[in-house]
Length: 483
Ligand code: NAD
Image (cartoon, rainbow, N blue to C red):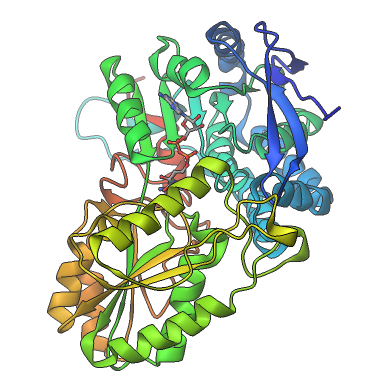
């Protein structure tokens, strides 16, 4: 029997009133059930919301440094559990061991970072111009918030929402994605052990319709912080806005890397290889379009194909270059896009086929695919694939490359590989993305600077991470004080 885990509500691990559960399989070996979780109902979600609402005032009135010390202790506890958590992340989501270790470390660091930030919350004192003796602002917690997260960074993303929410004095109901709910559970175990008061943070697993929707609709929820697909995020933003909740959605991407003639082609290929095939292409910031100047197009394609063919696939536990897709449906979606690309007339240079023999027989493995002769209007150049598929698009100059890079509805991350400073500056100024990089891969973010997209990649309401990560979770009160 697999290990069964409960929801975490009012400081207790509880079963769903539905008495139903769901299993999470190891994507590298689907014969292994990693764990069993509660298939919660709307009623379960409402109980969790009530627990969070009841705990809110007291937590808001707890001094910031005291709130921060809980996060600091939770960070420490997670650090002590890093090895087992890393292995569990590999078995649940399919990342390689190195990728998983990096992500767990990120969660440890995020908790530590916001534990410090909880001391800095305050406000700004201004000089009054009227009768009042004092004029200042005060940061207050938003209230009770819903946190809805995807499966692809199943510990880092919940951490970068939970930590600022708690640091700022909010109470929380967190809903992880059903493909990978274990990592949020681990964060909650760490918070519990660190002494987080009952009800301050609650964890409910289950379908979007029963857990996510009530969080976006409920009148006692003051804000919803969502990361996931643009399709779901759009409905979350609309529903939450109907009751005037604060809402923040960070969503999909179709990220370009431009390669100019001055680039070192080996370096460009490495940047695109890691950017496109790292985390099996399942990053919102993954590079999925290589926009390559025609002077170096053939040389680039040849080297990129060689790179793709050298990528070693395997169970993340053996720490190969690339692990499996997270699920059958993600695998099928990638395979479908490979077919779409072929039908659209792009040239499949390599990869794109499922691996079904030997050690791969029970996992969701696909060889990394490189398409050339891709037209920017094709679906494979416009739609988020969320798998290891790179479209190489020809540009006849810098201006054309920039136009192609911006000619997409998403705007999350972009990079350029060039030795030309003028091109680099022009690119940084004119690219329509929330993250812009020079001579770097589109993936990889620092925790202490803002992160978020432009266009359809984000509601563009608030940024996450860094100081900006606190903005969503706080309200500003302006105080005129006369004696
Ligand atoms: P998803 O949109 O399918 O699900 C995200 C979360 O929303 C899950 O917890 C899901 O259960 C929940 N949900 C589903 N329906 C809901 C509803 N009607 N109301 C409320 N919640 C609902 O996304 P996914 O497949 O888990 O994740 C992959 C997507 O996430 C990709 O599009 C990727 O680009 C995006 N992503 C974006 C960022 C970013 O910061 N921009 C980071 C990581 C992933």
